[in-house]
Image (tube, rainbow, N blue to C red; front, side, top):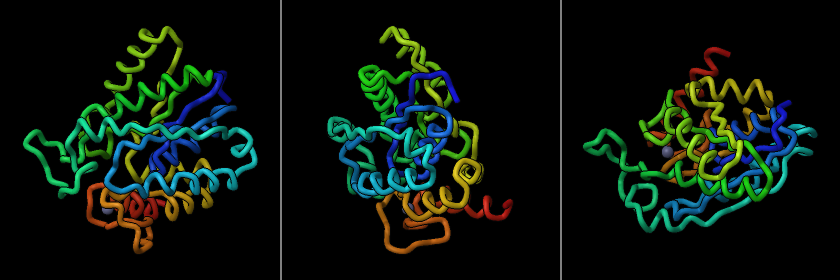
Length: 234
Ligand code: ZN
């Protein structure tokens, strides 16, 4: 168990942030969660959050005791000032700069900064995020260099010993499923599979072996491919 005062997990209700929440619950005595409403096209991610948190409580009495408040923050500003397929009803396509138009410039920077402000007030000194540059869409604000630099900036700008932890940074999607298995066994894998939401299109009709989703958007493809690789290696 870490000596930190406590952790604030950036928690969207998706596979990655749910695995990060479980990771934090294994490592810190006190864990709180923060979610952001920024005018996402599909609010499903936000509506699955409370159910996922309840499931985490049921998986382990220790986790239940450590898990504290969940905070929802309205960042509608982000939807107003950016033009992306996550906030507008347009098809997901690749842009000339090699990034899909689901990229919301600066999103993770803003999320981390707002989380740092809340953590300061709540007396928490670790921010946990599911950023990953192994199996990802190339978003520059998911890169390790960005997070290391941002941690420095937040420490300087807030005069705190805040740290940013990104337990998924060097894992591919199969390894992320495997981490869930190690942290919370079959119960956590089942929670991630059936309760979390990753699909960019907000599709939640049919339950596939890897979970709910349209099956063909970049987020579904990554999740499905990772699940199959995880099952093969299990
Ligand atoms: Zn999808």
